Length: 97
Picture: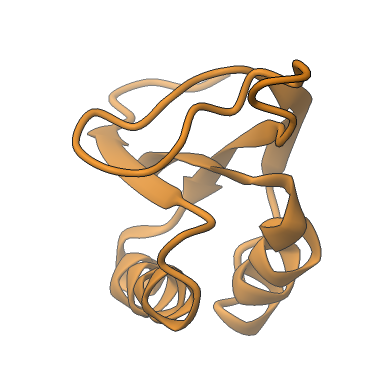
């Protein structure tokens, strides 16, 4: 099992849930509105007058055999609208309760 942290422009939210559904990934926690900026490109997401867009974040628990399909869908979303911003980071899950 892998933990996938997804940070994205709020406009992607429904598409992220759809990507999880299409990849048969059920478990996730959405953090709602968050602030941040990308490490390389893109505009900050601060929710201010100067930088009005907001980001959202999600942590999904994904079975190993479903991970690549999800990452492929997320990459396609990012490539379709690169100025919005979308990043995904994968960490191994070593224990659960």
